[in-house]
Length: 426
Image 1 (tube, helix red, strand yellow):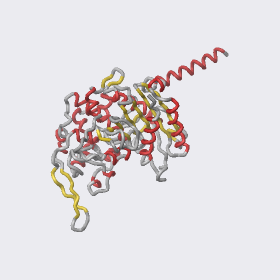
Image 2: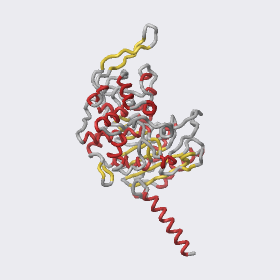
Image 3: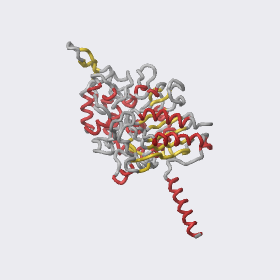
Image 4: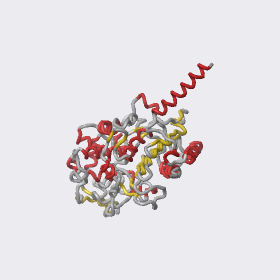
């Protein structure tokens, strides 16, 4: 009996060690880094209540402070219809959380002198070298007519990184100009090859003169193709070589291998807000025709926490340096200033008081926004319900992942920010 008890205890200990070995960062008690265990426990109570009310299927939450993992929990269901519980190694479609990784890939090439931030996009993608801007006017029949004028200047790589290239997402506006443009990164990658996408964009009028207006767009998809042309590699190979493998992001990529697809999360079949059917199409249906830098990667909360911690650490994690210190500082500074029309809050009302860096929203005021935070914190999320933020002042990194497409994702962004920030006590 004693031998049996010893074996059971040893088995439990080995299981615990195995779980810790899979942690994305070293663990610590929240109190040791100025956070409250009691207050962090509110996250579980609130999220479980939403799951019980069928507002969302499940969620994975990872919180690190001062480089230590203080909270890493899975709630609810990976696949509610099939009765499969959520686990921390569940894989999600990252959607626009792909953008910061593509941007880091670009900045690593910048550090090697293979491109400059001020380089014209047309230097690498000649099809986009002479773009025109659309001007909507009323025709004689009262219907909108689009006239074209030459762009005042070419779009440059900085414009792609900060969404000031004059491009857009067609689904984000109701104008005649918007109707011409691709609806989203995902739908584009499912329908077009990279060359087809570039040729399509090249034939369209821009919605703004480059460098004048921040408008969310397919520009990071263009950036990804530019990186492919510079390196003669696929975007997946570029990011794997420069980010995913060095950081140990073993479950991140543009495709989910067959042996891992059972770990892929499913959305609720009916949107709880609209009552309409919903699904996350990418990674659960036909593959994308190109590696779109704007939305097409998949991964886990643990993997992305390592990526975000690298950013907080100014380009390094463990003994792996991905970017130089000043490069990360440059990326995470506001690049809009006072001359560019800032429409960042149009993507999410809580981003009032934010500017924009190279692929991420950057907080410029402690107040203004309807969510708590500090000046200099930066973030971005995905259309399917994933989100990350980094708070350099508080030495805080947070990633949460859920498949809650549509409007619910905006609510959970604000909710999770409040639940995490209130747990800071020192």
